[in-house]
Length: 536
Image (cartoon, rainbow, N blue to C red):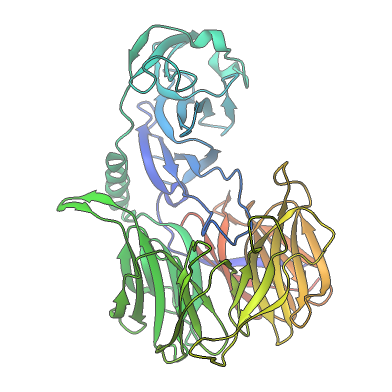
């Protein structure tokens, strides 16, 4: 088969892109290599109405060249990096990770990173937060570890110091440091790393190399315009616009970033929304807030904006209608605004018990209605119509979300797209009391008239993004895989694991603007402009 997918260009690339938001940086004093511990962010948003994303390792450890700043090795971590120390003579770095889990335990790892081969060893037999690491000599490694759980005396103010000795640390294996080796005297707990120092280091190194570093993470939305420009919303910008050449035309900076983009019918403006977090700034404490904003696509300037008082989601229909509603509504509310294609408000109503359903190109805005009452029940796919009755649009049930009525497991609705006027293709994930199981994720094509499944494609992991047309559906997965599915038969045409510069990337958003082209927004803040082929 000819190359099914090729990455034509990478937009938003730069030094240290793979690491996300840096937490700690260490430089090898012997060879000048750089090890960075970073945070790539969560991929669960919004919490309701999405296919469950469990076990996502949002932290990373990257090994970079000191001269070219290229990423040599990249590792995932389930906990943030607290400390990094280079072995006096071996090409080896000890990395302490961990944090308090918010409930009971202090969990983490002692990781040994081979700086040449990239091999990663998790040395502790049991999970334990490692606060600090320091090589005393070639054989002795000093550790500071948290207590096991919150019931320990002075658990949040003190830790335990211990020294572990090995003849050859390059031969240390997984889970070979036992619980008894982590005992020692109680010492004051060290402060967490200063993330701003790490960011300043990356900015300085990038500037010195002629390629400035900027914080980019989580491309939640990517869209294209008819004139070839590309829009993206990510942590670092509420929205940015790139010319067909890939050059940045304008950007609206935002530390928290935009979540969704709705391009207005005339393609002269676009709606975006952001949920800001409270943070300390040079001018004092900035309170958290929510923003809904319409932005000119010519200049990036604000045309109108407001704070709804709560987080929102966008749900659109073909022709430019937009539903703006509360992201996490309680059963007795669900503040909802309906906007016409000319951006005027046509209705304001309550839509309770309805979850966000991320369906692209829908004929009408679609939602998932939760079961009524406290007992479990069937969820329904519903549509918001256009005809008004007493100032409100009709909301009608279409069909149950679960196409198999005999199942007892809960169905989480994933992303989807409408094909033509009569078909919906969407992802779904099933959960029971044992959690996510193999072959419990799906992509299914259904008729919009009755919800009957035409085909079902089973998979082992949740779908993070989906789009396509009446020939091919493209599904992106948490593992970094893109699968092209025949829209008529449900058979996979090809699959490809995405790599940039030889390292894997994770797709978070996706759009297929025309046959032969898809754009993929990644967890690490880059946009992959890809050419595709369906020829075998």
